[in-house]
Image (cartoon, rainbow, N blue to C red):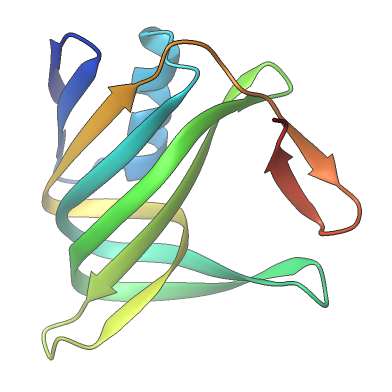
Length: 139
């Protein structure tokens, strides 16, 4: 992984075999990013994505193996229990352009992943909400 900082924007290249969520979390911790916006594209060789089922208050996880293009990676950065909390969604396309999308749990880069983080001054906490079963922004 390499990155350059331009004011409050970080342009990041995540390299082959690196884990996206792990790498982005590390950058946020090391650069004191506690609030921000994430956007990216790239390619992965496997991913775990999820979908939240509101009635059951739980995530259903799907494992995708093989090569996929990241057609969209979006999310935000906040804090929960004093630690960086990434909330990421991803769209992935296979070689037939069939897409899969959902909450990104983890993905391994197959070639490269290009991400921009826009740091926002301040921080917002998250807390677990019993009614929804989600970790909601505490605004």
